[in-house]
Image (cartoon, rainbow over all chains, first blue to last red; front, side, top):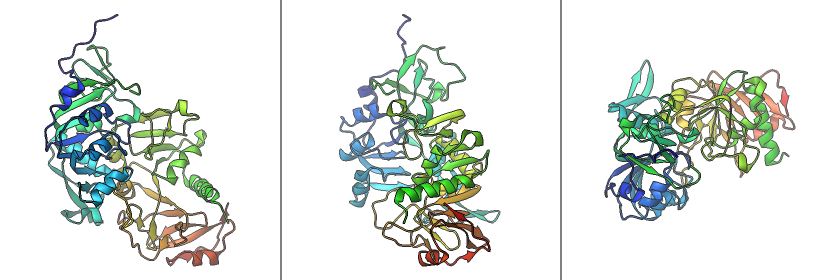
Length: 226
Length: 221
């Protein structure tokens, strides 16, 4: 048996979500349930933290993940691309309980990427002259219209990776990568749910997708499906 | 009359025949994702999925073979073909928006007579999302629409002008329904093929858009 890995970044889920404050802007990784930090979200649902602005592709499913936070009325605003699959999200929006900003999925991904890369805004052809760009600045380049989109940043990001080493270097699992690497770069505090923390040197430098400088805290998930 | 299943299968078979060997093809949510089950390995068609996969294979054979970390745009379990790869969402949409996808196969709510697509919002219905549709129609080199010819209540989907919010100002290139295949020629649509069992008259009756008719009209089954 090798020694048990000791990471200065390791925290319990409860201690990690305790760092999230009322009114925070919070990015949450995942596409559907793939790459969604469900253990962190379930732990956050046990707290009284509220008035969160959530940036995430989906708003969970009914009663699951962000869907549970929604039913708890912990979310007041949501920015994302596809919330239709959670009927509770559609209802909360229709009833005025949450305000929603829809972005095309590629604009959402690029806005998060830009936020982490020090780019404040960018022009994209997606959505030009459609309902989603109605109140946005449009500029023509070479005769084609582009929409000015602002970058997104957050106070905290909850993401899910595959394995981490003690430094916080991250690998991902298949299509569970999705929004997680970009979100790791775009938030002031990054909390990562991982299946396992291994000693430094156990991950191949070639398989590390997110270098440790982007990671603040690691939480080992007890969920078997990791 | 075709059953819904027969209509879907006919649309998918005809769409599959439109794809060129070696091409990179994105499959949108809904009917398009089922195309992955028709791909013959010998044709080397590379299926892209917006959530970060190039090389999507068919559905897993059984529930035990499915992996919650390996899903398509419709969140259904899929497999990976040899040579497949995974990447993050920003890279995936750089492929889409940056013109690196040969064909986007996508569903429709309405298509107007100039080829403009509406496929993300029905006003008054419980829809709260756009997903990757706008990026795909804006960025793919070719857009192939697969859809039933009419809505469930029998209303034409190919209309004079979209009454639903449009997906992009870029017109689509090909429309395949169980009844007909249309190609966009210049500013308008041309009926290029008929689905077996449907007359030209029946297409005029079930289509609001004006369209031209090509000289030869092959039939697909």
